[in-house]
Amino acid sequence: MAEYSTKLLDPLSSSSSRAVFRVDAGMKIMSKKVRLLNFGLSNNSGNGVYFNHNGVYSLISRISINNLQGQEIDYLRNVDYMGIKLLHMPNSAQFSMARQMAQNMCTSVFVDSLSQLSLTEESQRDDASLMGNSLYIDVSFMLQYLMSRNVIDEGFTLIIEWVSAEVLGYSWSFTRPPVLAVDECLTPVEPDPVESVYLTVIPDKLIISEGQYSLEQRLNSFYNQRIHNFFYYNTLQKSQNLLGLPVAKKLEKLEVTIDGRKLIPLKGVDNDAKKLALLHDFENEVSLCHYSAYTKLSQLNDVDFALYNPNLGIYYQANFSYGCVRFDKYIGQDLTVSYSFDPEDAPAAGKTNTLNILCEVLRSYNRMTGNVRFVTM
Image 1 (tube, one colour):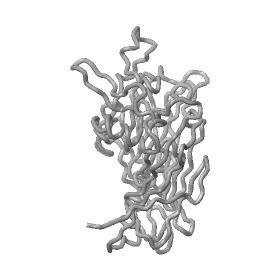
Image 2 (cartoon, rainbow, N blue to C red):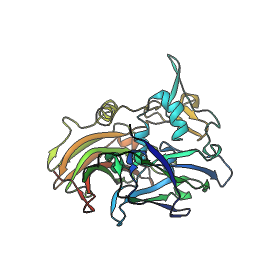
Image 3 (cartoon, one colour):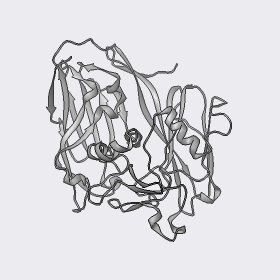
Image 4 (tube, helix red, strand yellow):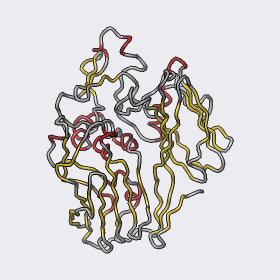
């Protein structure tokens, strides 16, 4: 069993907008255990700090890892991907460990009886501003390149860009800035292969304008790339969905065509059961709490029918829903997405919907040459 020593590294530079950390060459770092810790938060308006489904990862707008020569190896610039990953914990872990470690929005429920359901979220519970300097971000969890390696001895630079107050919804600051924790391996280990293959998440988005309820569009972001999983979700408009939660539209349907061939047989992903089943099959089981499908609270006589989050002050009134389709295909000339939903659910005048797309794209990095490339075949 390998022996290791934990090192705490201060940033080379740190500000309210970004932090830069450097690990020097020659230090054998266990790549799967890189994390930020020993930091705390403060809401400058004096209120509590609660996050959406992305939890404490919501603080990061972009994270990247470079080699010491400045070549960017891997990055993540849409932390909704972390929201998907955090849902893999079962209900009991969401209630206890996930709420403490990740600080994510409550996604667990109590089944009070065969006919009753309630959120595990309690008022003023796990306020991030009251957690002291014990907040934690798992960097290796965010970057697939680090998960593809075992030991890194050639060094690297980690660049973290923090979100602004406009994105998070309130002005915030660190009570103590984070430090980078790495585990230095003290025993001999087998060197990693010269070339590492991993998945990088590349985002894209399609705008659905007022009055529209369908679109068919080619995606230009993924030509000459090999896609593993294709995630999609609707976030409505900021004024309707302040937390940017992924929601499902009524009669939602998705079809994908790659190089002239339809990927999903029959009618594509055309109901919520198929959508959830494919997410479970292709990505893994998830813990989702969502209150009944498509029922608007304004149509109810009693809002007690909805699940209420007392800390975020919102009712869960629509399906909290991600979709996933397994590609495992090379995109040669054409990737076309067809998306539609109930015409009655079309954006009203002056409103828009956003169909967000996250694709896991295969890349490789050669640590001898420093070259990064997309794996095409």
